[in-house]
Length: 269
Image (cartoon, rainbow, N blue to C red; front, top):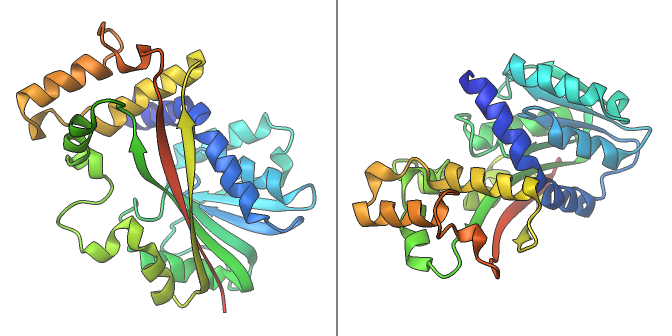
């Protein structure tokens, strides 16, 4: 299996965990019915379909991504959906969007802005260029998690590793940290900035799909941290976060965890 195929598989397995909170975020935006929107860095189109559902029968959402394999998967998923006719997918560079000015009613980037190598203010300026005056630009980012109840010190040590603080790294300018995104909106010339944070609670009973998604999440967040933590910390991570361990954290009857997504919005002048 190639790296791209593995990544696509991870997106699909994580969807039962993420979709409910993404759906809540989209509902809170009250996107205009019949509006035209752009989903930048759309990946395999899972969020594009949720956006298309929100804009209703008269609306349309275009997903854009630079990876053709993602777009092929997105088109396949869309063709199997009852609202697939409300979506289209196009290969393109987020740094130079292949659209004219004032084309869309709104534009978004979810799990992309702040993660991609593209400088975020430049991305927001480009998003604002293709949105009509008064239209909304918004970005959504994973912002925190508590996944190891009863082990706060271990979780803090794991969160301090490269994978734990990804996509940010200590060598970057602090202004590029995702929690400074309101400043990005100001420097991009967008007005009426707003931020909201949404919580996804996790507790039993866990469906098989949810359990699989959580296992993948524990691996994604800290599975590459071995060389950055003390041997006893790594051993404790393996004891609690490996499915085959008798002390696997998800087997705790009263398990509770959560993660958050932060939404940043602005409007085009």
